Image (cartoon, rainbow, N blue to C red):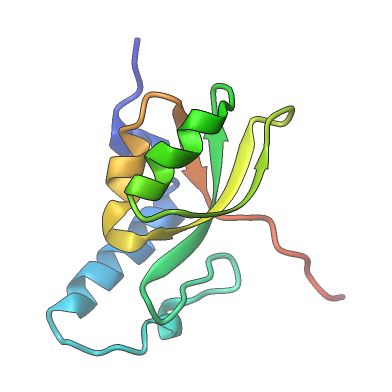
Length: 111
């Protein structure tokens, strides 16, 4: 049984995507203001995420790049990719068959 694309996207990521989509109608460009302590957004509307993948093959990076992804790290043994995704491409990335989940990265926290 295949997981629906929307179910692969963490609710916190979906919430930011929705806010960025609503902002598009206002025309404001300072998109990094949508960042939270858990989810980073840059002024281009890219969201930094982890992609959990079934496996990793070099050809997968081209599929992601075609959707605008900027891959920072691809760790094949952990089946984890850290990337910046354009907010309006998150659902299309979730539709890729090798993507299992899209979640916020784990950022270090100062104590």
